[in-house]
Length: 596
Image (cartoon, rainbow, N blue to C red):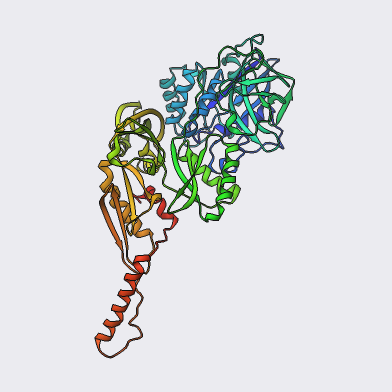
């Protein structure tokens, strides 16, 4: 165990985490020159295109220093805020962390939130200044920021470049010298923490774990403590670029287990593996079920594709256990699914994967968060869909989820960022100047307000400088109402939304105007209305498409033309009573782009 080092890499998006991981694999000769490619640990097309890590990966490296052989386990973490629970479990499986900061951009919001998570788990932090080869690098200023944040020794900051490979050997030496060796007792009952799982179409679910006490052996009868299920370890081993089977994985090491599990929901990140016959007395602390934060309806464009969509969602769930879905039907869109996601990025990725991997074109309804309604009779009703909200006369009060948001921006943009957050019903909690021209603003605000266009607007007003991170802090009571959209007095359930009472009039007016632009004219007049309860709060009218019936009538008296127009008018009246409005897909997402 003295020669094992378990570490992770924490950084903001695009600070060079994946590139530096590539260099570590190359310099420890874990991969051959033939296997080497950029973003080696990111194996999804979307990850490569967007340059983000969606699914974390773990890999074992062997390295010789001063004549001794060491085993280095890199437990990679996803970078985006939506996947913060996975990050926390990866951090819990390590003893040290590389804190990577871009020399040209400095410290950003996610760096800080993941750093605090690492410090809570008492990890040894090794600060690395990356991208020092860039022409816009400011190494001295950024080093000052790191010293202020960590209170570390300035000489302990390693300057490196993932692109050129500068400083990589210094990082490897620092990992071995500074990160403590894992503690644990191989003689105690088995206790291992699951920090990730992947789906293999031939072998089922492969769980990745870190052994804290005891030994995992091949063919051992094991039990997962939080789910209570038991399995036989068909194969165990360590994680090289491919899986490397072993007879046993001992305390302090990181490995994988294949036990023929076919359902991703049976393997939960944060669960504890123990021996079935002599189990550990208590599980590893910190386990929680991942809760979806954002809900949206996903419907097939063609109703006949419903069964195909069900199959595609089931296959996606094999790869990604954090997506939850249940069937629902809508009068406007037919049959589809109500899906729960970890955040907006998660929703985008699932939608993109459905289109790419399964060739499914889908309509996504306006995303919303989950509320809790309390009725006058004292019932508690979870509301994941606007149609679940009871009528206003039955509601006592409604609670909505709140978050603590941290925004780091240049001090020039403090005013616009503050006014954006206050517009979104935010409350300023704290304001800290990290350096003379970088400020951290901490707000408490409703989660529902950041689901719509918040991130895009934040990037726009700060010219791309602001970085944003958040975590949930619980539910608070709010004055919320359900706003319905009606077309020709028919309610369109897919366009309903739960909003704050004070914003209802403005939002209703904006949506009606937006829909007027998006819905094509029909042969009859269309009334677009926004209503709260029985009260209509906004209205727009799309005029009828008028065919020129008088074209064939030339010359003669005006009464001949009038007669034809009256005939058309009577026909339109008859048509209007049975008219059905076709709504384009862009209209369902109109709410998200109200400010365009």
